[in-house]
Amino acid sequence: MNMYDIITKKKHGETLSEEEIRFAVNGFTDGSIPDYQMSALLMAICLKGMNDSETAAMTFAMRDSGSIADLSAIPGLKADKHSTGGVGDKVSLLVGPMVASLGVPVAKMSGRGLGHTGGTIDKLESIPGFSVTLSNEKFMENVKKTGLAIVGQSDDLAPADKKMYALRDVTATVDSIPLIAASIMSKKLVSGSDVIVLDVTMGSGAFMKTLPDAIMLAETMVRIGEASGKKVYAVITDMNQVLGTYVGNALEVREAVYALKGDIAEDLKRTCLKIAGLMLLGCKKADSLFEAEQMLSEVLQDGRAFESFCAFVKAQGGDVKYIKDPELLPKAACKRVVKAEEDGYLVSMNAETVGRSSVILGAGREKKGDPIDMAAGIENYAKVGHRFQKGDTLGILYTNREESLDAAEKLYRSAFCFGALPVAEPTTIYGIVDETGFHPL
Ligand code: URA
Image (cartoon, rainbow, N blue to C red):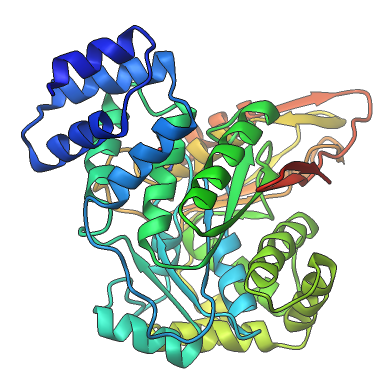
């Protein structure tokens, strides 16, 4: 077997065998296959696609490239969730404690921000003292004690994905449904949970720009889950505008804390209830999604979800004073209020552009390794379908880099399209995918 023949086969649109896929993934991971040959194969896959069995074979080869977390010492079914990325997506900060407070352990590995999208690990690091690296023993101890632990991705889990993703990032081969599915599912399968709920975002701020593509990605990942013996659901959610109100690390933690005390934006609430509800349903803590969502609404109202968040933060070294009073979280030295320049309805928003504006302010990284300004970000009141009058506040930009404000404001304004006629508010959740297919909501 050699890489040249494998590349040629895929270039002609033929189906690769499991052995050929394992040969390519293992060889690239151990360094015997060079970057240029793997790049050629990835590009051929981007252009010619992969069927379900090839995608599953690639996922399993990537899963097996490192170690697999063993959560069997934690009693009961464990749940995990993963988002394909968004702007203002603080869902993991809420769903983790909501589910944990109802007795379902959540042992989660999360990522850092990528491009215009934020990452849970960066957000958690805005809490003074919070540690995103725990030893295996401490990780397990915390899950047993508080029901929830969230850490950064460790190097020995799915190393093939780490190497392949870095190559895809610089060879324009990220936007391939089978490659995205294999990348995400390889990481989810090594993290050891029994039930996985995928939040597949769709729209201007997401990888998937259309509903058919989002459904195809969701169905592919659910089928991979089924083939590996895990219970996997996917929820297709809207990312044509900012989720909730805030974008930026400390700003989103602050929003999450108020939300966990019951003061929560409607779109954020709907998304969290659906994702957390499927986690409970999959772990057999509720007989129906309706019942699960009712249980979850109660823990948001009666303080149990908030208490669970406090216990989680404390167990990972975070100073709970900042959670009890989130106004103490890092605040930016400079702000700019952005006002509507004319009357009109907000017809559409480019959420990616809003995300890029927050990166200019310092909330994300222009390139890997850049420092983040934890206090930077956007308080966004521009919601599609709302009517604004000249002078109304669209949003407030926060930063410690005063010189970034002009460019960030220009970009932020360019994200909006106003019109004279009313438009409907967009759907928050398009549907759920399970092993029987897509169910619109
Ligand atoms: N997120 C991932 O983890 N992998 C991809 O390929 C795309 C998004």
